Amino acid sequence: MRLPIVILIVIIAYSSMFVAPAWSQSTSADAQQGTASGAGMGAAAGAATILYFPFKAAFAIGGGIVGGLAYVFSGFSESTAKNIWVPSVYGTYVITPEHLSGDRPVRFLGVAAENEGMAPAPGPINEPAQ
Image (cartoon, rainbow, N blue to C red; front, side):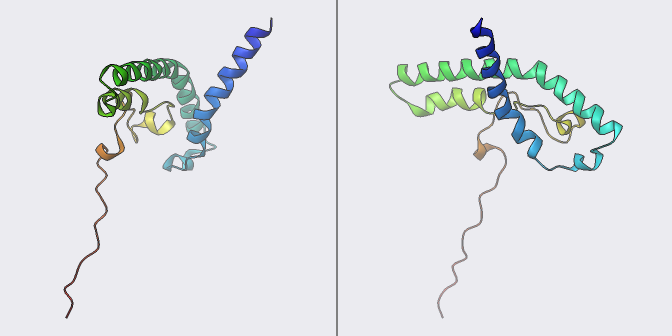
């Protein structure tokens, strides 16, 4: 009798870790907040997340396990494991209205931070001493 309640509490606690950061982000869709269109996009995003999240979570868990096995069987090669972990664990977990409107891409396969097109910050300019 207690097991279903415990499972429900664990699922709610686990999913709230992903939903809260998505709600706290400020975006251009804030202008639509409080309108019928904004409510519809929010409802559609919630429904899409309910359908999408289990597949992404299962993929991430499977990738974590396979990456761990690859780490061990490759002689503790971290780069081998990261080649599996990064695409499987990173990526989009929660669908937001920005994803549905096309303002942000949905990334089922994750991309490492250095590959997302972030240019390195320019270094200091060394001027010769006079």
